[in-house]
Image (cartoon, rainbow, N blue to C red):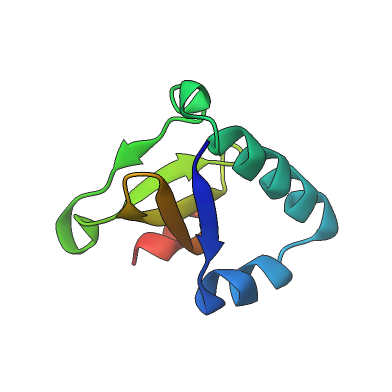
Length: 86
């Protein structure tokens, strides 16, 4: 199981989501902690200015961006629609 940390930016963005989206995101983060679910969550490496980060899907519109801190630990850095990549 991955250890998950939360950046202050992620926390602020998370608080701005509607309660239903927050609940959905929490469920997906729990699934994300187990690497066997990564394919279903569409975990993928980002490119360009975000080439050191990865992303996974909460739903069709919402994504979570994260970075690896170590082999077993990640930090969630952003949550939102595709505008978070800008």
